[in-house]
Image (cartoon, rainbow, N blue to C red; front, side):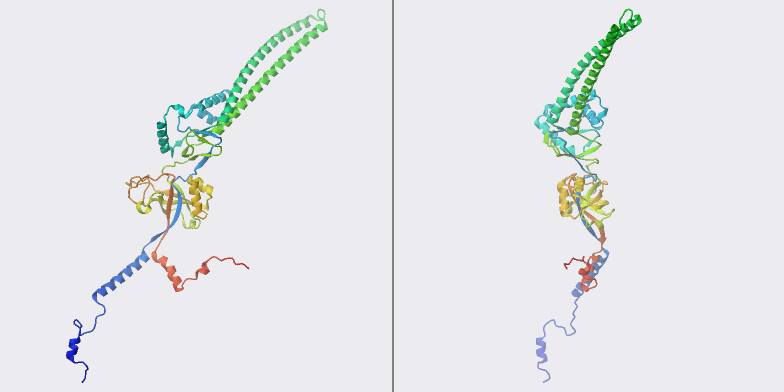
Length: 460
């Protein structure tokens, strides 16, 4: 018996579907799957070698012009009056000129300026006949148009009305008026006395000349000496009266200088002028609010605050070396979702060579809290100036005049002074270049990290 199982049994045992020939391992579906895998791998390798992805650096700043935001403190304690929203008066310009060149003002001009200032000081904002509702509406409207208000040189911005300083000016003005009246009357009387004495002196000189012409035959020497003594006495009286007039003039001058000095204290202490053409950034006290001496009351800028083209941002000192002029940036104001709205297109205009201090950052961004938050999150923040791209006909609602990276309508306009988050694209790299260092390190083609790390100090 050559086989344990008969052919009949084997035929019955065979599973239906088995083939008598060789078994095929790679079926058509499997071959298609493998081919697709090779295609995907090739596409992935090609993408990793040919594609370019951006490497970005984060920055933080404010949507403000790059020029410095100047703070102006109050030099007196009193009530802050918003004079920039009122019509300019003639004495405002006179006071500004007086603050620059007080030596060019005479007594009449000084007195007139003091009188106008004190008269205007008695007029309170409530005296304008505006009820509470209209006053509140006006305040809201002024707040809307406050940011970016341009003020010419010499414009009176704020008047810090101090009762103590103005009382000194009132007393000095009253003393000057009283002194002027009394000295004028005394001077007139003394001049009349001098006129009388001079008339008498002329008569006695004529009499003495006639007596000397007649000679000692008629008039004795004692008589001539007595008459000469009377003439000399009249001359002495005239000189004495003239000295009194000079003393009165000096007293009047001293009173005028006292009034002028107190007026100078009032102008310098109470009145805040625009010393150059500038733009209002922020008025801190409310209209008619009490402020103390040294308190910051104004923030101004020589450049327009609305829709700035050049804005300041700050990068970490470790990232400063990778940022240079001409790099593209994406600026997203706080309140806008970058995923939904993108950001404002821009580019780096310049990079500061040295880091900024907290005071320097505050001067740039205008807000102490933003400056301190930047200092807290960055090591030695460095100033970077960004140039924002203006709209080139992009039909986007509430774009604020800027070119946005998306065409999605914005829910509201970007507000000047808002904090901005920035992504600066420093370079573009291929994805494979990001993986190669790890691969080289894995296979030992790159030195260990300890050789590249900074040396650490060891104790002896």
